[in-house]
Every structure is written in structure tokens, then in C-alpha cells.
Amino acid sequence: MSENGISLIISTFKREIQVNKILKSLKKQTQKKNIIEIIICDSFSPYNESNFPENDNFFKIKYLNIKKNILSAKRNFGIANSSNNNIILLDDDCIPDENFIKTYQEDFNKIDEKAIISGVVDYPEEYILNYNHIKYKNSRHFKIYKDANAIDLAPDRIVAMNMGFKNSIEIKNLGYFDERFVGYGFEDYEFAYRYKEQGFKLKQTKARVIHDEGEPEIKKYIRKYYHLGRDGMKNLLAINKLSAKSTIYYKIETNFFIKLITKIPQFSNLLILIEKLILKTDKNNSISFPILYNFLRLFSYLRGFIDRENKNLDSKNRNWYE
Image (cartoon, rainbow, N blue to C red; front, side):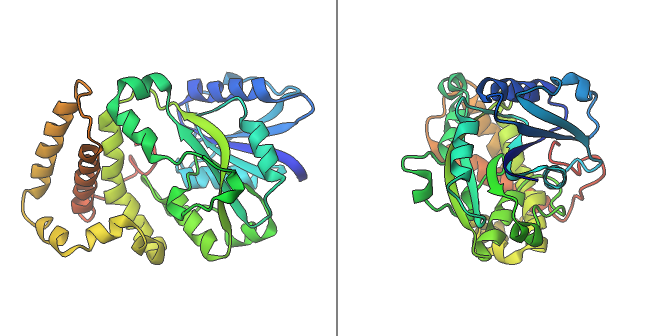
């Protein structure tokens, strides 16, 4: 294992176009003297290693398949098959900016083995200008105004779509991402919470990605919160209850008024109706108040919460890409 080398792990499924965008960006910023290993962790998508550039002097590529189409499992599999000490995690819809590798290299030289660093997530500028819900989403991610090492992050600010750390013995002993997280959400939060409890520092890096998730449909956005309420929090409560209790979502679920109204028959249908009314307002990107998006997220989460015990994760939707 190379102490100074970088293994960059991309978890993917049926996103060949986005992955090739990532590789194109990395090739532009990677000098020949900097050998970087790229590990693409797939789940038997309808393509193979021939769909990606061959290994060259810029970086080495490993194309691996794993039966579990689960983000935690893919990240762990990639880390287990890495050849270098410095690990970068990327999701397949996150395009690195032009200084991405350089920034991570500099930060790996600054941090010790008990630090997790997480970077900036932005959205395409044209989407921010033309879609209000993308503008809102962009505001939800932290931006860096100071030196990365000057700011500590809370566990809920860590995003595994742009994360780095040194693959030390202590990290290996603690374990990586819990593979019991199926469906959407909380696997990176639980990872960060668990590591912080063990004395790790959670730091910012200026390394930046553009979140290229395709056509910016607001329905896809709020559907994530439905699955967060239905599957994500259910997993988190079972896996790490202390971390679950620290979230705003737990406070929502245990609120007396919320518990009361969610037991009302047909309340879920009322939430769907309200969601549709707000979405109709957003059809022409006319929503200008962030509070309306907060309500959308809340209503969608509560619908998932109501359905938590009524719907099971079957074999068809036991993955993040539902």
C-alpha cells in the first residue's frame, strides 16, 4: 500500500455518462507523475470496463462488481480493494472541479490519521438560476469561507459523496460504513457520528464537486425524504439509536403533536394533497420562500414515517437507486 498515493472510489449504478465525466475531469488535472488509482464499484450495470478509458499514465482504473446494490457495501468494497493509504469517496453524480485532486493532496499532507474531511457540493450554475428548488438545495450544503483546518463539522454536515481520510489501522478496526443501511439515507451521518464519538475530527476541505444528477425534477428530491422517513430513520434507530436521537428527525417523530396527527386515518392522503398543491405552485419555478421547501421535506418525511411499519423493503427496492 502506498502511503502517499490516492485511491479514489466511485460508487455507481447505470450512470456511465456521469462516470466518464468524472474521469474526464480527473484526467485534465492529474499529472503523469501523480499515479492515482480509481476504483469503480458497480452492481452489474449493462456495461463493463470497456466502457471506460483504459489505464494510462494518468491513473489506474479498477472496475469491480458487487452483488449488493447498496452504497455502504460499494464504498466498503472499494476501500477493501484499494492500494493506497489516502482514500477519496465520490458518488457517481459528483463531477470534481479543476483543483479537486490538488486540494485533496494538500489536505492529506495536513491531516493526521484521526481526521475525516468532507468537501463542498455545488450544483450546475444554470440549474441554480433556473430552478428554485435547486437554488434551495445548493444553499443546504456548507460553503468554505476559512481555511479548511479551522472549521470542525457536525456529523450531519459530512457528505460521503465528497469525503476523504487516511486508511489507518484505527479506521480499519472501527469499520467503515454499516451495510445494514438499505434504502436511502443516514449511512454517512452514522459513519461520521460514530467516528466523532471515538475522538476523530471532522474537517472541511475546499475540494469541490458539481452535483450532476441529471434532469432537476423536484419530485425526485422530495421522494428522497419519503424514503428517509420510511427506511433511513428506521435503519438508523436499529443500528445506532444514540445517533438517531441527535437528529432533528427524531425530535419530529417523538413530538406529541406529530405523533397524534400522524395516527389520524387518511392523514397521509392529506399530506399528498398539500404536496401536490405546493408542487403545482413550483411548476413555473415561482416559489421564492425557502420555508415552502421545508414544508415539502417535512410532509414527505412524515408520509414515509407513517408508512414505515406498513411497507417493507423488498428485493426490488433494497437499494439507494430506487
